[in-house]
Image 1: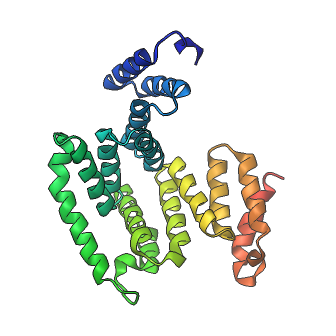
Image 2 (image 1 turned 45 degrees about the vertical axis):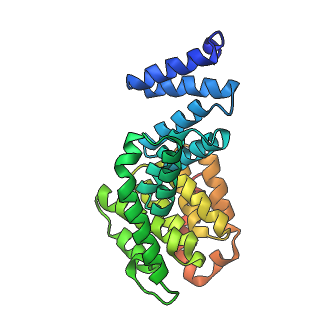
Image 3 (image 1 turned 90 degrees about the horizontal axis):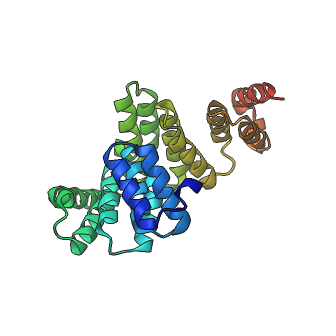
Length: 267
């Protein structure tokens, strides 16, 4: 970004904050990234980029930047406040409350955290008590992956899909770790349905990290990559799927046909 080279870091931050205040997000983002090109651990730039991603609902990206901001300066209260809000939206109430506590220890006057503190405390306590009562034999529907998948398949409106996403995210906290790949994959499918493609891709890739031979995930990730004009990457995913031995089992014939059909369009 050569046009910013003559500006001091302080001037870049001022311009970024001014653009953000006026609703010019793309310009603000450009200036903040210019700051990071100079100072990769600049807490204000890291925090603001994280906050902006959070505003856009890109929580994975937001958490990445906020975590870096906290690593850079663990006395910057706003980073904890912003991360607390994300954790709350994702249903991670204990983590949200812990970050709210950290933020208020640093700055007892943070208005938004003060306003939400008691609610977070109650939610965190209720969450802890519910988890404590839950045993390995519990079949509560909120933690039953089969019920959650069925619920997501019947989600029609965007609000219903977002509710299903939160339910799967809650499963990732309290559910059976052996089924995490299913929850991650299902979140990816739901995000793709509401055109949150960056988030969808992130969850598909997490699912594949958990279960490398998850061929249906390779199929869906390939479709997403094709949808976002990355045909070569899509083909690579489908080729990986066909190398997985389970794809050749008779019961997986329909999925294999889908993969080979998609692959055939590019070869």
